[in-house]
Length: 220
Image 1 (cartoon, rainbow, N blue to C red):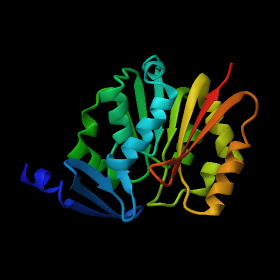
Image 2 (image 1 turned 180 degrees about the vertical axis):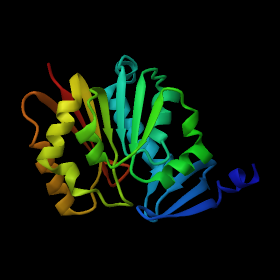
Image 3 (image 1 turned 45 degrees about the vertical axis):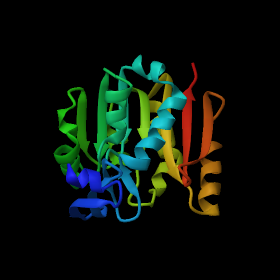
């Protein structure tokens, strides 16, 4: 409790873990809240949870409650899953895919992710998982980063087409991106142009400064 109180004045680190994939992972009390960070950015809870909560709000909490299946690519500490289950009261099946087992260890230990009954966690590369899965989803959340770097495959046509195939009609994609350079802006503009008239695409720039969100609806 003392660390939590002190964190309103200065962040209090309580755990550090080296990771081959994310280099350095930290769990910290910050402004009375437990958060998970990489070296240069927030990975779960804190600003990231606010960003993805806004994206879910844009889609609509009531609409999401009526979905049956959600796929989360990039789990980290699981803050978006906690938002779905605790705040939105989503009762359907959630599949979370995370490439770094160290983040899942921390998520289970400090954020009780393994206590969520309707959650299946899969340790796998997001690209590999979407190639293998035979399931279809009502909501696909893409939040794949290594620190502040987004893998190139997320913006490639093959991956986009595969995600679109896995999405049910009237389902949504929520894609969190980071825009730090003019090149990133051009990349996102090119990404938006890859969706045809069968999709409704909305872009939300400057969410918490450097993040840009896409919500993409698959039309009937």
